[in-house]
Length: 406
Image (cartoon, rainbow, N blue to C red; front, side):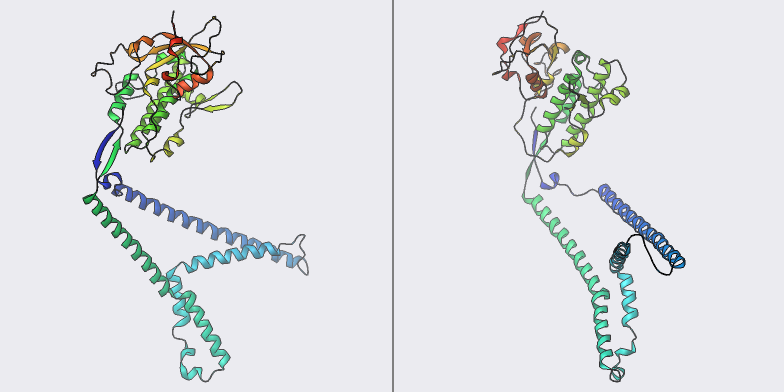
C-alpha cells in the first residue's frame, strides 16, 4: 500500500520534549536520587553493624587469651574492608560543597599562626609545616574552585541548549524534510477486512485457519507481521504499526489457536505464551512471531527492499490428506519429493468481495488472480515455510504444476 510522503519542518520529525515528558523525566530523576539515598543509608547501617561485630569479636578474643590467635589470617581482609569504607566516605564528603565549606572555614579562619609577629617567634619547621597544611586545605577543601567549576558546567549546558534552539529555529525557517507515514487507516481497514479484528477493533479468531497445523497458523501471522515491521520501520508513525502487530495480530493468532483446540484464551496463552512458542519434532523450541522485546527495539531504520505482503494475507493454504504418489515440489529449482499437497483459498472468494470494488476492498491492497482459487499444489516443508514467512511468493512457484482440487 506504500507510504504517505509529506514535506515538513525538521521540528516535526524531531519534536522537542513535551511538558508531560519533562515532568516524567524529573520524576524519574527524583526517584533515582531517593534510591541512591536509601542505598547510602543501607551501606552506612551495614557498616555500623559489621564494625560492631568486628569490635565485639576482637574484645572477646582479647579477654579469653593473652594475644590474638586466629585460625586463619583476617588482617588483610579487615584492612581492605576499612580501606574501601574510608575511600567511599571521603568521596561522599568531597562531593558535598556544604561540608567542605564548613571544614575549610574551621581549619583556615581565625588561626593565630597566620599572624606575622607570631610566626617570627616560632621555629621555622613549625611554620613550614603549618604552611604546607594550609596548602593541602586549600587544595582539597576550598569549595570556591569546585563551585566555580560547577557554575561553568551549568553555563556550558545552558549555552549548548541556546545554540541548539537557535539552530533548530533557523532550520525550521530555511529547510524542509520528507516525512514518511504508514497509511495507518488503510492498515486498520485491511485488518478489519481480513478478520483480525471485529467491528469494534478488538482481536478475533479466523476460523478458516483452524484447519492448519499450529506451527503453520503462527507462521502465517508471523509472515504478515514481520514484513509490515520491516517495510514500515522507517515511518514516522511506526509505533502505530507496532501496535497493530503486537496487539491485533498477536491476540488474533492466540484466539485462533484457542478456537482450534476448543480452549479459552487464558489456556492458549499459558500453553503457547505471549511469544507464541512451539516445539519441533525434536523438542526444540521455535519462535516465529516477533517477540514483544524485538518489536520494541525496532525502528529508526532506512527503507529496505520491500517484500510483498499482500499475497500472504490474501490466501490461506489448507493442508490436504492424500494417498496419491509423491509429487515434486512446485518451487523453482527444487526437486524434492517429500512434499505435502496444499489447497489455495483466496480471501476475496471467502469474503465474496470483488477487489475492483473500492468501497468494499482496501485501496492499494493487492489481490491474487481468482483462477488460483481451490487449486492444489505439492510443496516441500522448506518452501512452505518460506511461503508462509514471506521469503518467497507465487512468483517463485511453477503455477503450471497446479492441479484442480476435488
